[in-house]
Amino acid sequence: MSAEELFKDGNRLFRDDLYWAALLRYDQAAEAGMDTPLLHYNAGVAHYKAGQHIRARESLQKAARSPSLRQLAHYNLGLNAYAAGDSDEALKWFRSARDQGASEDIKDLARTAIAR
Image (cartoon, rainbow, N blue to C red; front, top):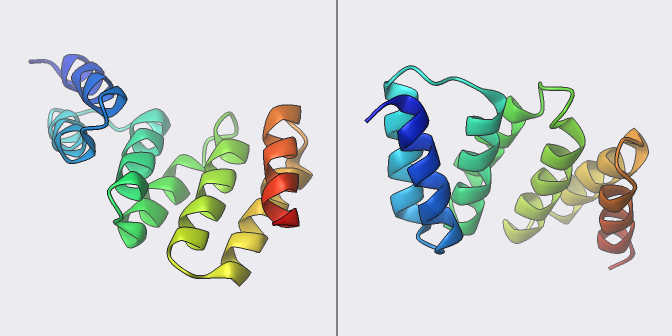
């Protein structure tokens, strides 16, 4: 399978809530030469869903280097930090997502998370 096919299969597995299998496919896509912000973002969210908070943070921070994914990655970094028990870090990421101003939907989600 090509890197793109492995990535697409990882996305299918993720949609089926098979996070560990999705992570395997994302790793295989990376080994096949894929190195995109979207791959890092998807892997980060899959790591978060699988309870691997350190790996989730690493992948989401890589994804956040992309201007088009920065706000969404910061919001998910907040979710990940909160799930890992670090409320201060979570607030930092939620505020960053709120203040970036790109997507009103993400800003609203971040405001709700901050209020909680």
